[in-house]
Image (tube, rainbow, N blue to C red; front, side, top):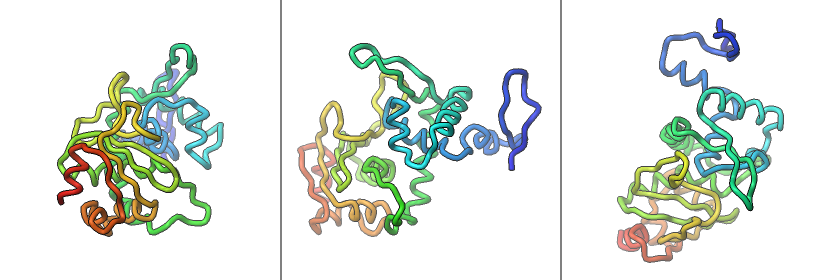
Amino acid sequence: MPRQPHAAPGRSRRSYDQYCAAARALDSVGDRWTLLIARELLAGPRRYTDLHTDLPGVSTDMLASRLKDMERDGIVERRRLPAPAAATVYTLTARGGELLPVLDALAEWGAGELAGPGPTDAVRAHWFALPLRRRLAGLGGTGVVEAYVDEGAFHVRVGERPVTAQHHPEPYGDGPAPEGSDTRLTLSTDTCAALVRGDFTLADAVREGRVRVDGEGEVAELLRTR
């Protein structure tokens, strides 16, 4: 277990006390729930209640504690939305946005474990966004893609350098894209999971009728012609 370091005055945190880049990273994001909070915030600013809803299993005390830690470490910040929303939201800082490739790699590494949801597993449509975005990026096209699965819709932006600082588009998000999309995919959750696992390619899924493609975007055209 990490042990308490001799922290600077006013700063208390657990640390592995190892002069190693990986250990230093885990000092900040290695605690339970931290990276999953980052996964949610990569989709855009979220209210505390939204985060609690989409992180089933986390207690209110644990969520509040993790968010406080992430604020302390410069990963997350709070801001007040202007009227008429007038709500306080959590958002990733520019440093927090740099966790995208970390979560990309974790999702890729864990994709093979999606053999099927267990009886107690929660499922959210946008949890497929990270790995599906990688599959779409492999096509080489650019655009905003909406995906509709059994649990709902999510959108991803592909072919562009994603920026998650304030006032820049997020790499993915829950629900339809606010600005609209140029490609729309309709598929079952089982098909989406199989694509993520690598059981077949997107182009194969389209040819076999497992995925319906609508829209006139570059990604849509690439899927129809592959």
